[in-house]
Image (cartoon, rainbow, N blue to C red):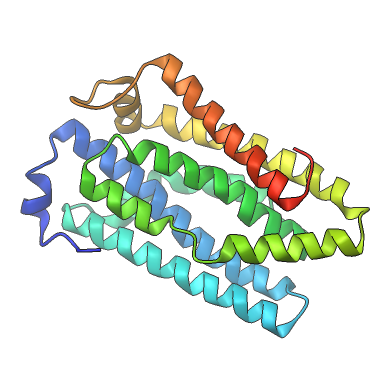
Length: 233
């Protein structure tokens, strides 16, 4: 993916309201990718084998690379990345504290289910933004093989001990409730994203009915992920 050449080129296509929405989205995404890196590195300590530890370490490195991409984009539009991320630190940290996994399998399910909802949310919002930002978000959120790894590990564990399926399903239901609430708070608390979604940004936005449909699509995607895991939604 080509990088923008500098702030002037990027700002030329962004009016102030649109730019605010871009900064909000990229700030949230950047901090999400940074925390994904640290969480995957921590989850690697719970891995049952050296090969699984190495796989998670590789995924963690990939997430940090994604963070670097978003940070460079924020620099390119003349925004301090730390300042862009700061409004989301407390809320995202609180989410991860409330949903800290206790086991290897809980960590895998969280990465697949909880992060999956967040990724779907960012994709939905990026569709209302300029093509360059949408392309960047799509690139950053592209699956790097993590989903396939999680599906294989969880299915094998459930096949070996079907009793854990119920516990993991309960854990996933808790995650989806927390993740959807978090997405709603992010959309409502930031003026730039709110203006974008409700149509205050010229050429973008939607009505409240479409917002309801958007969160419906997030829920439907979650149900599909649960089915792939072999767990009850």
